Image 1 (cartoon, helix red, strand yellow):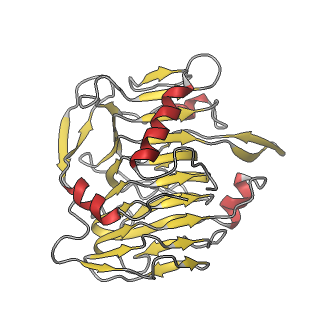
Image 2: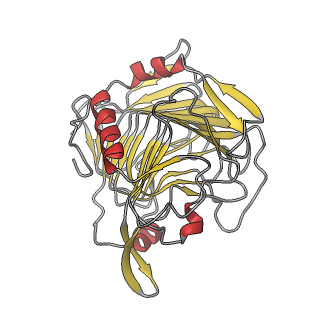
Length: 344
């Protein structure tokens, strides 16, 4: 279990001072445009901070606020949930009526998915996330711990392609995620900053369901800044047989945002079950390592031969120690035991 679970509101203040740049380009050339977004603090003046339960509470059912007021921060620090498997997301805010400027801080979700059950089983029967959040203008998720759930974090706008919100996610630790560590199939723009997503079958999905599609504004970006995303092999049914495998860092579509990668590390174990083409970075991805020239963004490739898809200029190494050292450092900085892993 985490050594120090509840520093969420302090982190909100810390990240509020940072500036995050979103760039548009072709991945190999200089960016053609820059947008800057400063996320406000989750406990700034004028906001209401709500603690849904006493520290130490263990929940075995979903915690939901379907229609929150505007400008509320929900502080779930030191609250644990075991409410997965379930068909509804474990923590859910704004699912009936999205409010303005919502924060979710802290909380731990420890699911009990069976490692021997297939991706298909959980995707079809228990398609739920650790945190589902809908808001207008902006939404933030900080310091959530989630293990052994189908999806990780699921942001949505108030309507399909509303283009009326951004997200900021930081300090989250996800492990044994059976599908997407972020299911962003409503293609909300935003910033992922300093998260450890240690075990994801897919890293980030921006693929609208049921063949829906739309045009995402050119100004909207998805920025990965100091991210650690490791892929995770789980059982899948392929051609009537159960096989172990993973998908890819990105599951993309024509509706996806323009991606900016800054000072981040990714671990890929094997060729995707969906083929090598699925392993390419999204079209137009920009790699901006101007803040970390000595530690550039990297793919740690543990499969055979060369990495088999377009990397957008990311460094590729075969040394797993690059990943394990970065993971250990993140855990120490965020108050986890250095050897903590999925199920802890």
